[in-house]
Amino acid sequence: MRIDSYTFGRIVIDGQKFTKDVIIFPGRVFSPWRRRDGHGLHPADLEEVIKAAPGKIIIGTGASGMMKVPDSTIIFLQEKGIDVWTGLTDVAVAAFNDEASGKAAVAALHLTC
Image (spheres, rainbow, N blue to C red):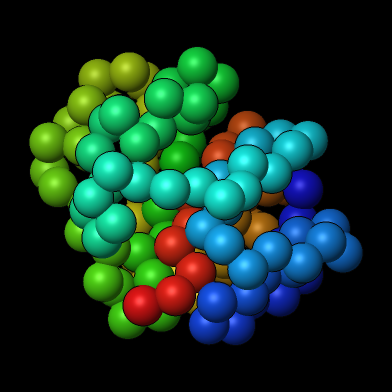
């Protein structure tokens, strides 16, 4: 899967437009992706990712980084054998596209703030 473009509140993945937060898995997109605490990311919000057991997760924290990823969530993922990368969503998009050609990675992207 490849991200064609991203702008605030809108992402195009393999030609398909999404306007709600997404998790991109190899071969499919999960959207809308909602979190229990809208601007906080907790292990329970990533159940589908844990089941998929990717080598890496790329987390986009929004256009201005409003979605917070607690250290406890990062540690939880690492203990499951998942490498974690976090950053602003526009940078996460580039990181995912770079990573998508290598080992299996998923992306969990907050599209707005």
